[in-house]
Image (cartoon, rainbow, N blue to C red; front, side, top):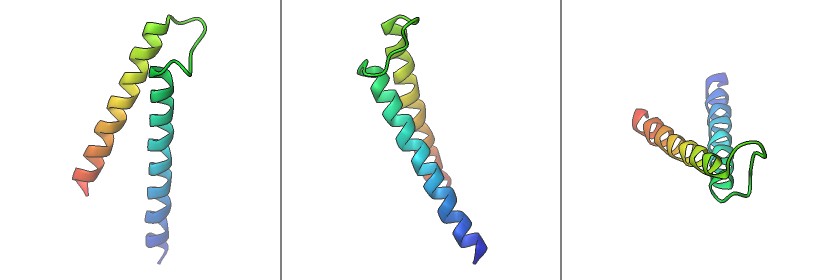
Length: 65
């Protein structure tokens, strides 16, 4: 029984991480989230890197199951 609860908790933590990563990534691409001492173009590129790598990790996690 403890394993089932652990799986659910791991899934919830993973899903939360994915949602937060996408929120931050899209916030950076839309320039809602900015870093004052970094050029806006670099922030947008970093945001796209976050979005793309998060989506790749989601696909890989689904394929692994």
